[in-house]
Length: 104
Length: 172
Image 1 (tube, each protein chain N blue to C red):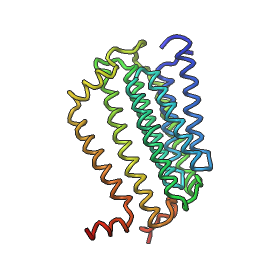
Image 2 (image 1 turned 30 degrees about the vertical axis):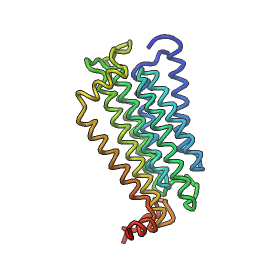
Image 3 (image 1 turned 90 degrees about the vertical axis):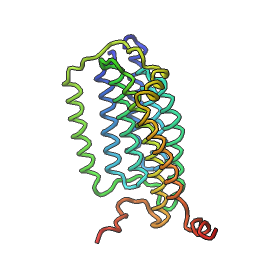
Image 4 (image 1 turned 60 degrees about the horizontal axis):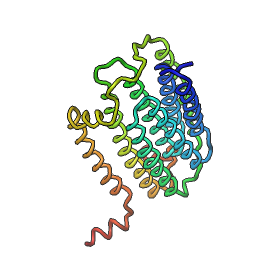
């Protein structure tokens, strides 16, 4: 069966939902971040799919958007992992169930 | 997208990517989860090649497989006493249910829509036109992205400094 736009979009959707499930269900903060990275990857895959298959006079715009998402993802990963390390230094844990200082 | 080669590549890449993403979900050891994550990134890079986005595939390999994966590995290794456990929270079930419902909605929309598509890859998807678009139409977001990267660099360094280092800097 020749892969069409539906096949690529299906993979992107499943990857996004797996990333969502991971980021909502993991206890370790680094696990949550891995889910977020998977979701960003799925969005990139969907944008590239539309850029390849859609009828458009300017198909490169999707690629441009993906370049910006890559940039933001790199910045997000650096800051979020630095936050995880800083929290670990203060609390000796990055377990999101136990980071409840704001609870009365 | 005709022929046997692209079809085979698609199914192999789809299986690799989704199985590796499932591995991130089910593996109990956090280090194994990071390795599965790297495999997922490589699979997505293969999809980018299949969709004739050569430059994006290169950037994906360099940024995700090269930089972000190493960053995640460093974060795992810098938090040794928090445990290598990749378990679920007490609130895992509602999250997984939400993801399943969202997947059902997405799959319904994807398969129910009559997509208006082209068969062969459109012209102008090469690195040259990407560079032209980035430096003409999208030059302002491009510069803002560079400012964002600088801010993230400074922020990451400031966040991870230890209290001793800050005390040393205060003396000077």
